[in-house]
Length: 237
Image (cartoon, rainbow, N blue to C red):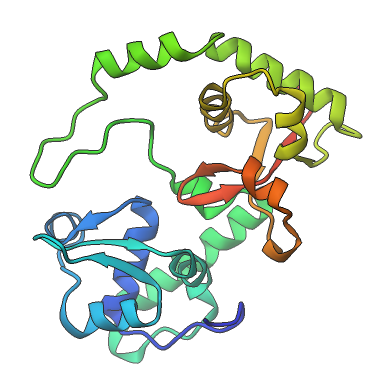
């Protein structure tokens, strides 16, 4: 494992792969990589990223599919702290400028990379299938399972937050929020939290020091953009 300040030496293609997998925030096949970015992740580039524990590659069927590991997300977030590879030329250097500015902006806004790049709640197509919105029967089933509407769940979250927060905008653990809303359906609550990330006054982030997390904190996390998030802040209306 690399330390927080250390980023392994990578080729331009390996860097491009990490960046594309980060911004797509999902598993991509080589076909999709080719369509999106004009390259595939194969051979030595793929082997090195897998050996470093940065990418998980599914080789059980073709085309091979790739996804960032937790360490891959960490390194992708820190790429801008290393020197661009000389063989990458101006294109790679320009990418590092973008990554540096992105990191600075997200840090100022206190928004995680996972939140920023998260996929919308649509059904992901299988390899070779056209993209489409989630089927109506799935939405109907989810609605039937929820005890209250999404608007009502969000209102419950905001009410629980007001009871727990020391001041508007203060951080509150999701474990405490879930305790207050123990009677609320978990799936409905998770969906509400994911939807609330898009609100201007709401921030939901992972705890940077994962060693400080208790089992209770981990169990209460909500998965957003390939990251477990543990803390909620709601600013003044």
